[in-house]
Structure formats: C-alpha cells, structure tokens
Image: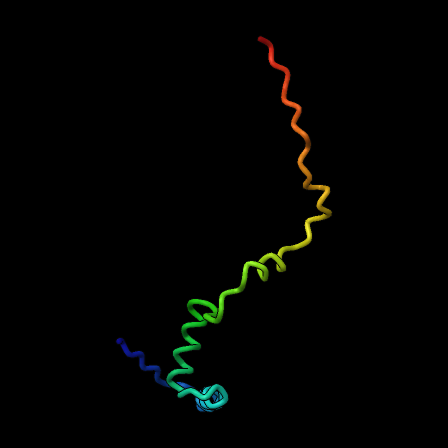
Length: 78
C-alpha cells in the first residue's frame, strides 16, 4: 500500500489530530486516513435510508396538484 508523508505540519494541528484520534480510540495515523477519505469521498458512514432521502425532499404542494386526470381519449376521424 502506498505511503503519504506530510512534512511541515503546525504543532497545533498535530495536537488537535492527536486529541481527535484519542477521543475516537484510534491512532493518529488512522484518524489521518479517515479525515482524508471523508474529505475526498464524503462521509463513509451508513448510507441514508430511502425514507431519509424522501424526508429531505421539499414540500411540493398538496397531493391534489398531482392527481391524474381521467383520460377520455381523443377524437379520431376515420
């Protein structure tokens, strides 16, 4: 697996990373990997359910607006 070396990191960044890793019970290296993955690929937690996606949709109005009209066909000359 490839390695990534990052030099010149500010001390306050290192301390913050160490604290964040400790709070999650992982190494600083693992926390660094998680941060990079999330920044590049988005949150990797559980996928939102279909219900959650539907709940995020804006209200488009009452259901009556979307009721289908009875199709009576069209006049055709034979």
